[in-house]
Length: 153
Image (cartoon, rainbow, N blue to C red):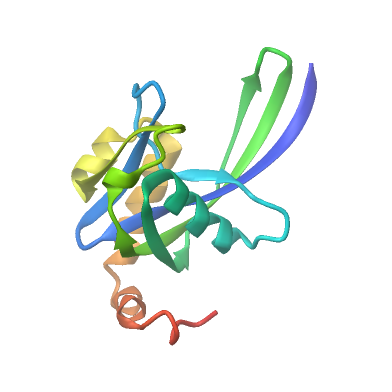
């Protein structure tokens, strides 16, 4: 079986005390929004774009988060090593009711504890738990108060 490396980016999008999760087509699990990196995009740009495309909600990157690294078999022919770069994003605008119905079964806001319960994958739960701690730090709160123009690049 051949081996392939794949790279994606996405985020933990926060609005107040809630986190936005998606349930991909099939609706049998909940996860973080993420997707493939387009040529010429930064990881941060990919995270913002993928979150917006999948959820209908725009966020602003306020911090990097640990990456997720896992293996799976694709179409029974390829071992895929996937690395997902994740970011903490603060809500800017949009409505989760406008999620991409071609790729996503549902998008919904959950309070932190419920989001942690609903997440299907342990590695995503671990990242979201860390994101919760980071989001509540005074230095992160200060960054959230900055306008996008004032944000450090």
